[in-house]
Image (cartoon, rainbow, N blue to C red; front, side):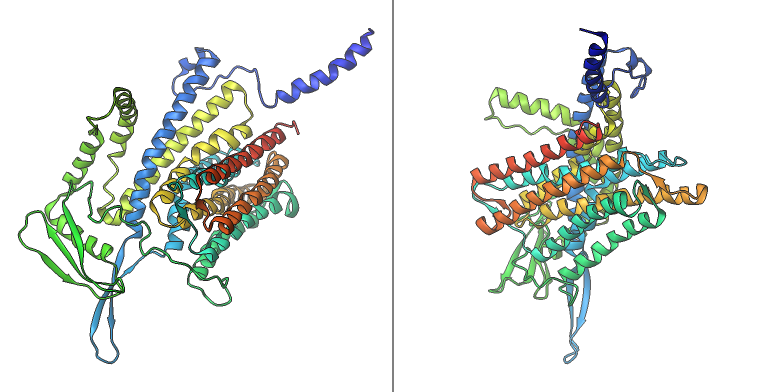
Amino acid sequence: MSFSNISRMTLPLQHIIGSYGSILSDEKCRDYFAFSSETYLGDGLRTTLYLIGLLYCFIGLSAITAKFFRSMENVVKHTREVVVTDPLTKVQTVRYEKVWNYTIADISLLAFGTSFPQISLATIDAVRNLGCLNAGGLGPGTLVGSAAFDLFPIHAVCVVVPKAGELKKISDVGVWLVELFWSFWAYIWLYTILKVWTPNVVTLSESLLTVLQYGLLLLHAYAQDKRWPYLSIPFSRSERPLDWVPEEASSIKHESFGEDCFDYSQVSDNADNKIDIVFVHADNRTGPLYQGMPPNDTADSFAEQLLMKKCEDDVSLLSLWKQQFVDALMFEHNKLEGLCLRSTRIIWYLLLLPWKILFAFVPSYHIAHGWIAFICSLLFISVIAYTVTKLTDMISCVTGINAYVMAFTVLAAGTSWPDLVASKIAAQRQTTADSAIANITCSNSVNIYVGIGIPWLINTTYNYFAYQEPLRIENAEGLSFSLLVFFSTSVGCISVLVLRRLVFGAELGGPRIWAWISCAYFLLLWLIFVILSSLKVSDLL
């Protein structure tokens, strides 16, 4: 065989090796996570340690998201006193109205809160790239990957969460269609920026328009919820629960006040389900306390106001905080448990213990209607998300895996973990599927309008005044391809949800076998997105 023939045979082999080198690299990683001595460890050991740390951060995200969701419940349940005067009799009636509209709460508090890790990650990436004409790829890649994780794996989990045979449907289809429209439009808009309007660059006006569209989403969803003429879709709303999250038991048990600090029961319950009087009593049995309550008001929020007012007199802020640490250290066990089950519970308790002690520093969600706990939970989520980012960077550095591939997979899954936990809790506790599915669709919108919009606004503003130049997007071709794949697979996902509504009458739950088939289908769509996107950004497709 001649030398020229051998050369021609080796060229394709070199091309293949070079292509796979875009995914994997053999260059020694000199960066470290916490200690410089990490660089002396073997790559296999370092990767294993970083993966263990990553999984432990996921456990922490699950724990703090549960606390975040609880604080948000208290924020949404907040009511205000409204005095209504009858124009004829001049009699004043006191009513208690919800401060938060449930649709706005889903889009802003729930979707924005659970997307906060991605938003903070992208913003940190933008600040680190100030002064550079090229945008950081970690933020946009993570947000597109997070959108796919939100839409496919989280739908896969939520569809099997209800008990066997239990059906949970969207009560307000009109609001869901509005949220779905803005979710799809977000990715059409992003593709238009990257490939059509100003290819491979982002201008200041484009980033500003991206952020402003989040306000349009809020306005349109509120108009649909209130059925404003000309701005809403003429869909009737089916039954919707009066409370955003219904009480799990008839009596209130406040973990920060100790067991059975108070309970209440409804009396004078008329045929229209309207509560006229709420009876509240304390454990000291000094005498019942009666309060009149006008018709059409809910007992839960009113009774909780009386309960909170009474408890504030008896329990100090310090004792509330102390109780949280006591609860964190407490290990609940059942004497009837087997040895294997008890050992598993002990191991899980020890794994969670550091996180539970750390999160006990978050103030009780009973204080300030839950706002302080809500903000502190977001701060903890951001810190853990940043740690996840650093660990993912280290895994990418040690293994040589393409940064975009890590962003589409591990990093997207890690920062979307709060979305998964919040949607799962909503699917479990709420009587409808509105919040569980709204969190998915609205989180995708928030990821683009806020999660990409704000970092791009920061960079484009700096570049405009400092260099009179737009922001350049590296690997815009791969990112645009990922958007097309996501859009195509998301059509398949939404089609199955619509089909389930037509066949079973609900999007979540139903016959167990079909729920698991839907779950497997959603996961398959996610795998298709991840594989195709990873191959494209690695120049293998």
